[in-house]
Structure formats: structure tokens, C-alpha cells
Image (cartoon, rainbow, N blue to C red; front, side, top):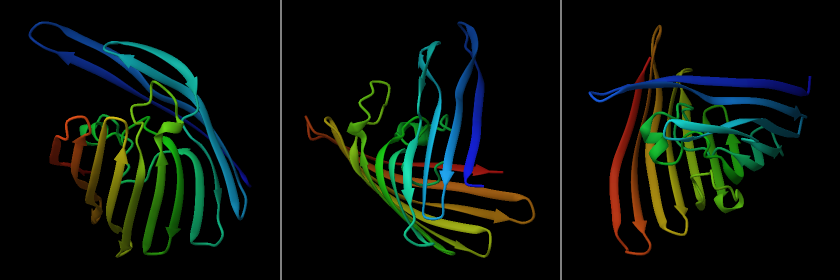
Length: 221
């Protein structure tokens, strides 16, 4: 009962057609096996799988661990987690083709080494995360930032959830703030809306130039 096993396989068929040429290819986005041992007060988990490294229309695969961590629960509501995993920010939608998540470096394959404090209540949930992207030491990882993230959400009316996330990150070239609300709303009996709106302020250290702007993503299903 304490051992949990899983496997994840996801793929995408891409097609692009212009006046000049037509091209297409299949992309294996994820092929992972995962195992965990879940005791009453603590748990450990890890994955092993294939990562596809893409350059234009060419790609190559390598074996690596997308996430691995240890978790401790001092009480029913509080937990502490340390290791490599995806930071909690916004909706955390796994669709890495959504440009909002990808261009903000919150998309697929952006796991970093983190220390996370979480509170999981019946209505309120909060994640406070220290991020050390420099520990990855991997040329394929797009995010090398060190910083912190905080995400707070409120669950109500048995189906609805609203939240707010804040992120502060810095690497050798840039420093940035990102903040914004998100929500998951249902429309009985079968419709739902996932939305996230973020504001980013990014400053280039070498020039002091600052860029500000809003991005948003909405999914009605």
C-alpha cells in the first residue's frame, strides 16, 4: 500500500505549412517511469525517462530524471519538500506548447532544485518555495534562476478555486518579478474555465533596461 508506481507517455504530431514548403514530424514529449514510497510522515519519489532535445526539426534523446525529491509531513496540513521538481506557480498546466507558460519559463522541462513549504487545508492552500536553478548544472535546462515563489489559493462552493502567485528570480543576465491571479471555475453541468493573467517586469543587468508586460491564458472546456 505504501509503494506507488506510474508511467507517463505523451506525444505530439506537428504539421506546418507555408507558401514555400510543407513539413511535419512526431514529437515524443515525455516517456517517464515513476516510483514513490509513501509513509505516514514522509515520502520519497523519483522518475527516470527520456528527454527529447530539439533543434529546429532535428532531435536527439537522452536518459535523465525529470524529478526526484523527499517530503516530510509534520502534521496533516503542513509538509516540507526538497529536491528537483516543478515550482508551484499559477495553474501549472502541463501543456508546454502554450506560449504563456513556455516564454515565462514555467513550461515543460523547467524543473529546478527547490525547498518548498506547503500548507494544504480544506479551503486554503499555500506554497512557499526557495529556488536554486544553479544546482541543475545542465546545458539543456533553460532556467538557471535563483529566487522564490509564493502561491495562495482558496477553494469554495465545492468546485471553484481562485489563486494568486508571485515569483522573484535572478540569474547572471536578468532579474524579474512575475505576479498575477488565476482561477478554475465550473459551469454546471459540464463546462469549466481555466484562466491565468500574469504581469512581468524584467530588467537586463548589463544595460539596466526594463521590460514590462501582461500575458494571459484561458481554456474553456
